[in-house]
Length: 125
Image (cartoon, rainbow, N blue to C red):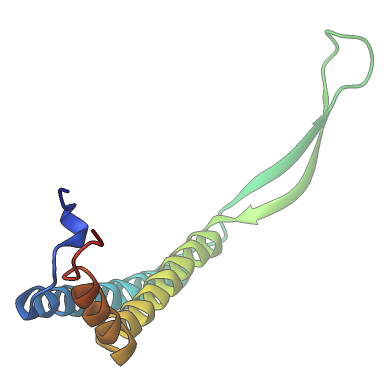
């Protein structure tokens, strides 16, 4: 019976490498969360009153007649871009927190130890 790559026993070196990878992931995600939040603040500070209209077009009359267009709302672009960047910052912060709990918790380490122990068991004959 051949073993798949995921069933190889985890060594201390492999577990340490995974923990280091999670640590690097936390650093990157934390840095990007701060960067996106700073960009959002700068965009808000530099934004002006530039707007784009949100319109609604309705057909009135037979085919070929010009549709009537109604302006529903004037959307300010600067705050919308800042909102997008704040959502990106929130996402990176949440991923950083998740990587933090996954990479350094005792639960993850015991899970890795169980995987290492279960893959060394022999198959029943």
